Length: 251
Image (cartoon, rainbow, N blue to C red; front, side, top):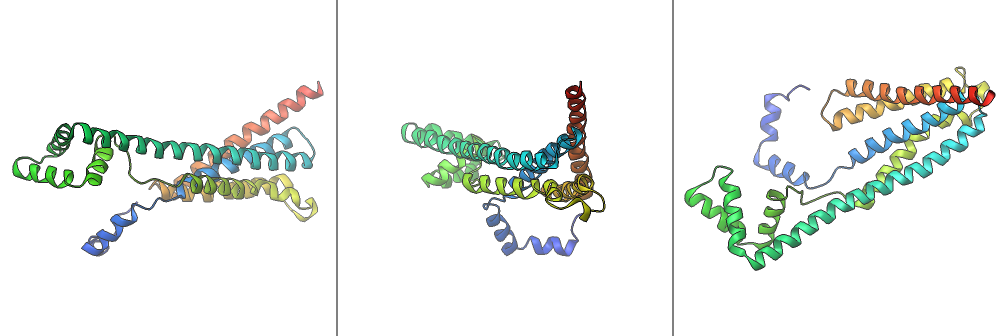
């Protein structure tokens, strides 16, 4: 990725722009939940479709299994994300309680921890003592500093319920793409039902990869191709397994 022009950098580093940017970092982005929910939904649903087609089962079976997968796996993934996000919040709450208790019981020891933390950052002498005094003068600031510096935990995190909702919505919306052609008459699809499903799914993989690339600050094109190959590999494996199972059943 290319660095922005010098004029843009200067505008981004004015006091007002810096204050706005720092304030915005406290608001959690749910793009991660969307991207990974969408990838998982598309991969798993198209894998089901590929397996059904590989086994030469009726199209209705693909629809039934695909919808069941969307609802069951989507809900399972959303619940997993909810519990994981909630656990992260509980870790922060536990760390806060520990630090509050330590400040009540051994305040001088906690001040020494602050002193050593900032000494490790290069502060010393009167400046170090001033920093210690400013931080420990406000109990909430004191606890916040210990949570982030000693435990390495973020003070703000995503809403567990919202993260779960975004995950499920992305899983369902992206995951239903491979099934859409099965709701249309084969005569209306020049490429055929499965081929149309494969093309639509590939386009979805690529688009999700573009978003993923922006999210992780990588080349969107490279990320799109990577996600397309990953999804295609999962679908190919499911298709081969379907063919194999059909041969076993025929025997």
